[in-house]
Length: 620
Image (cartoon, rainbow, N blue to C red; front, side, top):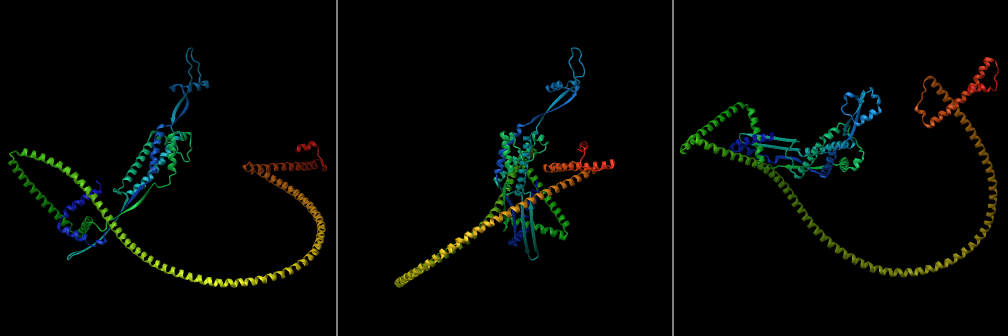
C-alpha cells in the first residue's frame, strides 16, 4: 500500500466522523465560502510527443543484429608446446610432423621389435576465439544503442512523471465569538508522479522503446557477447571488412550503426499542460475547508494544552460506543434465541443456518467491496474529468468572451469600412467631375493659345531662316579665303619640318654610337666585378669551411661531437663532404710545412720548394 492510499484511507475515516456532523458542516461551509477570489490551485504536467522514426529503425535493425549474433563467428587458435611423453594424451597430425622435423627428441634405441618412443612430443591445443573484428563491432554497436535508448528513455520518463503543484488559500471567518484567519501555500514539485497525462500513443511508443531495450540487454547477456566483452572495445571509425559489406545480416547491422551514430535530434518533443482549478468546485472547497479546520483544531489543542483532556474524553466516548455495541449485540442474541425457538430447530441447527447465511453475505460483501472499489476509482476518474471539464468550460467561456469582443470589433470595422467607402466614393465622383470639366476648359484655352502661338512662330521662323541663309553665305566666303591662306602656310611649315627631321635623324645616329660604346664599357666592368666577387666569395666560403672543420675537430677531440641526425639530410651531408675535402687540403698543406720545419730542426737544412715523392706520399 502506497502512502497515497494510506492518506486517502485516513482522510476517508476523518470524513466519516465529520461529513454529516452539523457543527462541522457549518464551520466548513463558512470557511469554504470565505475569500473565494483568493483561492488558487494550479497543476503542471508535461505531454511528451515521441518521434517513432528512430524506434522503427532500431526495431528493424535489431532483427538482423540478432541473426548476426546467432552466427557466432569465430576462428580457431592453435596453441602448441613440447611436453614429456608421459603427459601426452592424444597424438595428432601436427605432433607427427613436428617429430619428423625434430629427431633429437628420440634419444633411446628401441628394443628389437619394439616401437620407437621419443622422450618428448609436440602437443597442439586448438581453441575457439570469438574476438573477431565483426563480433567486436556487434558488441560496440549494442553498447552504443543501449546508451542511445537509455539516455532518451530517462529524459522522456522524467518529463512524463514530473508534477508541479501550486495551491494558495487565504480564509478569514468572523463570528460573534470567533475570528479565524488562515493562510496556506503549498508548492510541490515531484519527479515520481504515477499519474502522467493520459496519451495512448505515447504509452505504446514507450512500450516499444522498452522492448528494444530488453532485446539489446538480452543480446549483451549472450555467451558470445560475454566472451567478446573481455577484449578491448572498438573505436570509430569502423573498418568495413568483407563480412560487413557482403554478409546481409552484418550489412544491415552496420546500416543501423550508421543511422544511430548520425542521429542528431532528441527524438521527442514536449509541451506543458496546465490545469487551473480556480474557482474551486464544491468538493475541492469542502475538502480544503476540512483540512483548514483540522489545522485550526491542532493549533487550538496545543495552544490550550488540552491533549490529555481530549484523550480522556476520547476514551470515554470509545467506552460508551463499545457498551452500546455490546448492548446491541445482546439484544441481537435475544432476538436470535427467540427466532430459534420459533423455528422449531435446535440452537445448533439454527446457528448452522446462520453461518451459511453469513457466508453468503460475506461473498456478497466481497463482490460489493469490489464494486465499491470500482465505483471509487470511477468516482476519482469522474472528479478528474469534472475538473478537466470545468477547466475547459472556463477556457471556453474566456474564448467565447474574446470571440464576442472580436465579433463586435469586426462588426464595427465593417460598418466603418462601408461608411468610409461610401464617403470616398462620393468624394471620388465629385473630384472626377471637377477634373473632367477643368480638363475640358483647359483644352479649349490651350487650343486657342496654340493657334496664335503657331502663327507667330511660323512668321518668326521664316524671318530667322532668311537671316541665317544670308549670314551663312557671308561666312562661307570668309572661310574659303581663310582656307587658302592656311594652305600656303602649311606648305611652308611642311618643308621646314622635313628639314628638321633629317637633322634629328643624323644626331640620333651619332647618339646611338656613343650609347653602344658606353654600354660595352659598362658590361666589361660588370663582368670584371662579378669575377672578383665570385673569387672573393669562394675564398670566404672555403675559409668558413676551414673554420667550421677546425671547430668540429676541436669538438671531436673534447668528446662533444657525436654522430647526429642533424647531418642526415642531403644538403647537410653535402656540406659535410665539402668540409671534409677542405680539411684534407688543409691537412696536406700543413703537413708539408710541418715536414719542412722538422727537417730544418733535425738536419739544419734550408727550406726547399720541392719534396721527394716518397715523403709526399707519406703525407697522403
